[in-house]
Image (cartoon, rainbow, N blue to C red; front, side):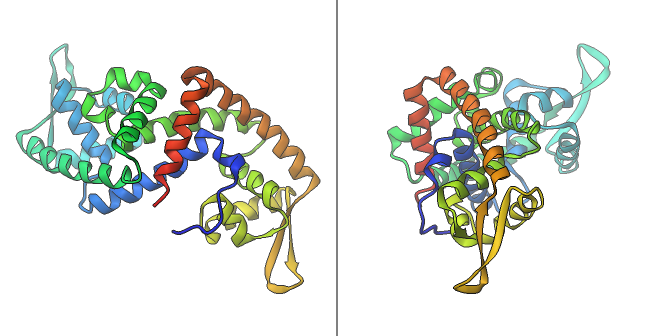
Length: 287
């Protein structure tokens, strides 16, 4: 969607928030470039098997950061399509390993072209040097994945954004859990603090999303007593949204936690590098 209002600067300073926006764009690009039945996760599984040879299902899930429930369904689909098969593991005949089939190799070759198209769509706002810098910075953010997975996976912006977002999201979830908040609650409260009093539509614009996308979060924050919604005296069809005193206190506590997480990230990458990464992630949404 086109957003007429600038994203709240305080949100744009958090790498986790920018990664979430970049991930949404990456998913949209995948939907355009990969309209068939296979997803980037399927491609990643096939790439690992093609590069590293037979792997257990558990090991694949560990390498690709995919939980067991999703991994079982994913492998079953690939096996039913004849793209992978199970064989007894050489090191333990009681266990099975997965290997890619010849048909899987042929499908992978075609899927690589689709993935390349998706990458071109995703990184279209960037110059070639900026694209290269983004890849390098994201790889520095997820060194364990880079060391364990094939370059065919870890040189893709889409994969790196997804992996970095998931890893940072876990840190944020853990940090905010004690406040009974989720990242979306923090994002809305932060945007509201910079825009209040404002309409729901304007608040959504400050967050870079559509109005309906924040309805559930508004409802939850209202029930928790953190925001107040009152009819707009100039237009009774609209509501004016404000923070309550409790909302301000909760936001201050959450901001302290988020700042600590951001500082930790800057400590790993370096301040200049983190600022550069944030700039590039912001550029991804410039189309």
